[in-house]
Length: 254
Image 1 (cartoon, one colour):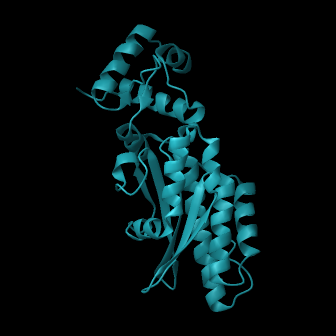
Image 2 (cartoon, rainbow, N blue to C red; image 1 turned 90 degrees about the horizontal axis):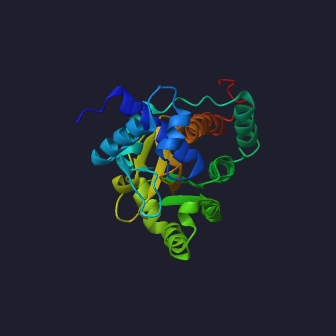
Image 3 (cartoon, rainbow, N blue to C red; image 1 turned 120 degrees about the horizontal axis):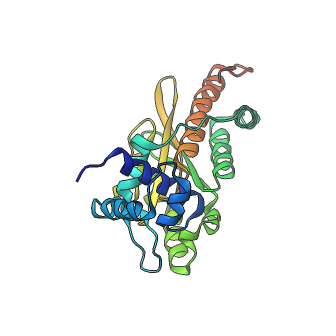
């Protein structure tokens, strides 16, 4: 079965709406959203095809559809629009990182706090050397703002995972350099099912010294969050360069 342009537009609309509202998306909702002059019946047929192809699934309690891990991967790789941080957001990040540049560990800890505040997700930052990994974890209780963790069992599983810092630090250390997004089942068995992790690396003198990122439900604002993480990691690179070089003034880039 071919993934046609129409199917792609429908899938993109479903993912975008589900990320925003956390509710299964039905054909009637889509027919109002899409400017494609196609009937709800046609949309239902296309949704059934997308489900058969593994991009959607059908919760038992709803007539609507929900994106699968496969759908989010396609979205992240090919469909999502680039989110451009507003100047006020950039200035806030630069200003707050600049205010905590006394030494590396303090800078990293504050970066994870700032990331949790901006994204409303559990965030982390690591400092890695040949001997061990320091993990700074912030915003663990922010999961309660997301319906994916509304039951006691779901919340407990997530909190137990992030509370096992040694295992989580080991998981993060194994991730690739650069911007990395792993979605749902792409993560190891050590990560709670239904979770996504986004990380970016930062460097001192060209050497990778740590990772900055978030962990949360697969239904996350990938475009916005990746832009925030990329911008923060690039500012950490400059902050570390300043700390190592003894400079007082940050680079004015971006």
